[in-house]
Image (tube, rainbow, N blue to C red):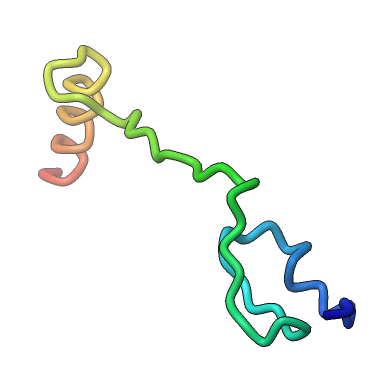
Length: 60
């Protein structure tokens, strides 16, 4: 199993296909990034101001 320098393992993916092994490889070294929802929250003052401003622009 000599590496044939296909560069699949260096792309930073959690899973990739290794041509030398002729198999898929799952890398445990790379940590999965969790998505954080940090958008507008209902009841937030900035949200309410923004919502009212957008609504006024649409009605005009």
